[in-house]
Length: 116
Length: 111
Image (cartoon, rainbow over all chains, first blue to last red):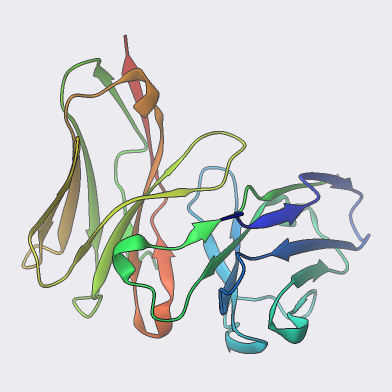
């Protein structure tokens, strides 16, 4: 099966600009996650979707970050305006409802954002 | 307030020897524990997991041990191979299938 697709792979923007990331999960996976991984740290959950509804967005900086998952498939994560501290790798992951946790869930390759 | 700690940022091991990566957590309500491996420029990949009702799970060269009383788990890799060189993340599953990651340990296996 195809994996989790993310684009772009790399993005460099100036502070105060806006940027958007796209994720296409594994076909049929109902749950989609966006994580932020700052260099030297573990991935931090930003938002979790179940189909097209938000399950958890408690750590999403809502003054500048937004995310949507239309039709319960693809998702986009947007930052506007970007700050220097937003430089990180943005990872998307997906999982299937009822998937045994012995299998974890699958990540995409990520988008590396550099804010200058 | 870190709920998952990996106190060793890095570890070097000779090829063929055992690698032991450690992880501590704070909440006894976590019900599943996972290890992910990450190579540069790639997303993390799932490696092995263990349920809170078990104390050991083995998959080939990889074994995870869980000590619930100490809130501690460890990943053993035997024998270690150069291809095992990567960053290893310990992670815990909370309610609503939310996963929290530790900061990671960078493993270098020296040929």
